[in-house]
Structures are given as structure tokens and as C-alpha cells.
Length: 378
Ligand code: 5GP
Ligand code: MN
Image 1 (cartoon, rainbow, N blue to C red):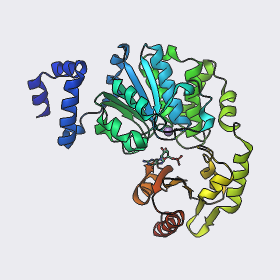
Image 2: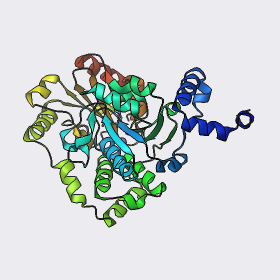
Image 3: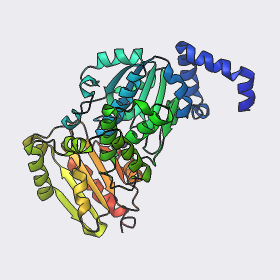
Image 4: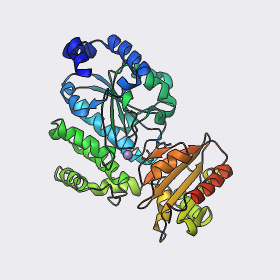
């Protein structure tokens, strides 16, 4: 039925009209995607089909998840540095602010903070012909940008490595949970689109930063052989990897280290019967130690060094919500756990979630659900 339909319409002509007339695209897109759920699932074409379009000059917006980390920012900037060399006009828009320790990445100064200047962000988004969505796979992970992104009629491209992508929302894309990081996927994009010669020092630094951050410095099981091949290639192109490590890991203020000490001493509980550790941080700690965006990154990894610990949970009392992070070792599915109990998701061994309950309330809930999952935690 499908092939008959396409033949009848003259699919190629349809595609040409689709590419050339944004208003036509907008009408069809909205009608099909909102009214015929089955057809929506047919719409994310493989990223390889996008490559031939790269030689047209376009207004491009690249965006990522809220509070971008090294992989989110690194992939966005690496892609920007590629697209600019290919003659595109590119703006990276972050939904929110980001950690001070990603400021060193080449190009961060030009990144727009949507939360800070929504009007300017909307103006740029309205002119976008392509929207790249990196390191997230469902619009609500962009918080305040969600409705705006959903309503845009431009071509939307997904590049991401999380589970359960909202594929119908994208025109082209690649979603691959076996990839170590979105930065690795941007490297793949550059190579597969025939642009290996465009990898300069800026791109190398951005990609390497995201790979290091998302693989726990090449430690997690997501570090497949191809990751080391990628690094070897960047090294052969002149990457100074020590510089990136220093910028990522030796780039904090004293208060952050003292805060870490305080948290490990006073805010960590270990439930040996469930092989689980929990860190719950009240707002008063954040204020006392002057903790800023990104300063809590990596905290969730510390309890994993305790013998036998299978699940680590970290919850932080943020203004708008209680934000959870989960990490597991081996056979405990953090993605399902976060989805089921804490309105979140992510990867098998690393996920996040949220709660609008109080800190005490959500901690209580966590204690109940680890009891419920006792079998899986043995
Ligand atoms: P983190 O704990 O470092 O914030 O996040 C761990 C992983 O889970 C990351 O890959 C992140 O993108 C994902 N993640 C964090 N919070 C959420 C959330 O609320 N929803 C979903 N779907 N994924 C999340
Ligand atoms: Mn990532």
C-alpha cells in the first residue's frame, strides 16, 4: 500500500516540493504528524540521506539538553565548527546556562542562553532552516524551549545515544545507544559525510572532551574499540589530550572540593542490604558552599567505589524540582528505574529523573522503591 501510494504521488517530485517549499512542509508536517500517528513513525530518515544536503548553504541552529555537560556542549560546538567550514550560518542555542568548566571549549562564548534571552532565541529559531538536536531525544529535555522546538517547521535532525527516541519528531537522524557519546557520533558524522579533512584542533578538543566525560575517562563499558581508534585519529591530527583533561578535571574552585568532602561525610547513606548508596543534598548546602551549575557533576560516581555497591542515587534540592541521578553497575537498568519511578530516563547504567515532591518526600519514596527492587539489587 505504501509503495503504491508513493508511486501514485510521484515520490521524487513530492520530495523536491518538500525540500523547496517550507510552507508546504509546514502544512503537511503538522497535519500528518499530529493526526496520523502511524505515518509519523515513517518520517525519521537515516542520517546518511541528509549528507547530500550539506553542500547547500543554510541557516542552522544546533541545540542540546538543558544544563549542557561536556558531551552536549562538545558535540554542539564540534558540529558548529564543521558546518561553518562548509559555509553554513550556525548558532548554538543552549536551553539554559551551563557549568563554568565548559567555558574553555572553543566557541562557547558565542553560544546563546535561551533562558536568559528568550526573544533573541526565538528570532534565531524562526529563521532556522535546519535544527540539529544533539545529546537528547525528546523535546521536553530542553525545558523552556520545548513548545518552540515542537512548533518549528524546519528540517529537524537528531543525533543522540539515549534510549527511546521520539523519532517521529525528526526528519533525519541517528539514534544509537551503543555509542559512547554524542561526540563520538559527531566524529562518525564528519567521517561518513566525507569531511575528515575538516577536523581541526577546535573540533578535536570538543569531541575528545565529550568522549572523555561520557566514558568516565574510558572506563565505562560503552568504551568500545572504535572509541580508542577515534582518539588515535585525533592524536595523529595533533590533539593535546592533557590540555583537555586539565580543563575538565583541574578547573574548579576550592569551595567545590570542600563541598565534596562535606557531602561524602555527612550526606551519604549506604543501604548494604540493597547494595545501594544514596546522597541527598539540601538547598542549604548549595547556598553555604556557593555551589553553581555543574559543581555537582561527578559526585554520583564516588559511592561506586564502595565494594559491592550496585546502585548509586544522588538527589539535589533545586529551586524548581528535586533532580535525581542514578548510576548502576552490571545488571541493573537505571533507564527503566528512572522512567518508572522518577519521571526520567537515560542509559542502562546511567540515568536521571525528577520529582516535584519535597526532598524528604522523594527520599522516602526512593527508600520504598529500592525495597520493591530488592531482588534486582542482589
Ligand atoms: P546525569 O545524572 O549525569 O544528569 O544524567 C545521566 C544520564 O541520564 C544522561 O545521559 C542524561 O542525559 C540522562 N538524564 C538525566 N536526567 C534525565 C531526565 O530527567 N530524563 C531523561 N530522559 N534523561 C535524563
Ligand atoms: Mn551524552
